[in-house]
Image (cartoon, rainbow, N blue to C red; front, side, top):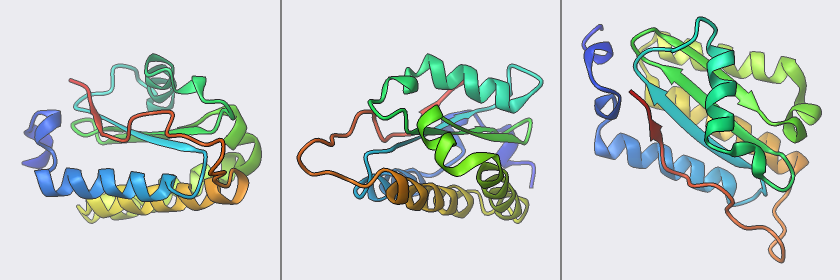
Length: 153
């Protein structure tokens, strides 16, 4: 169980698992103007993972999307903390209860040591919420943020 938490952030997932997560992001974003990013690090630099997610969100300049509809999934593997941070456009549409429910779902899968499935499930769910509120417009939409996983220290 604890072997996963001793690894460096880039080693938490195999190349195949990383590819599956990135593909889930790509597929989620195909039908929406919204953006999803994942940030993985070993230890949370702040006591509160939501505050750390907010800090990372702004460091990654995720607030620069046109519709303010970017979402960050933040995970501190060694500290076993996570958070979801949505920009003001998507948060206004889905509200606090949506984020809380998604975190609970991810925690259920993480507690079963099914980290990749947890991330893919929440990417799918967030993608569906983004599609509902920010559907893709072929004439105007573009991929505003990279899809790859960002690894901290």
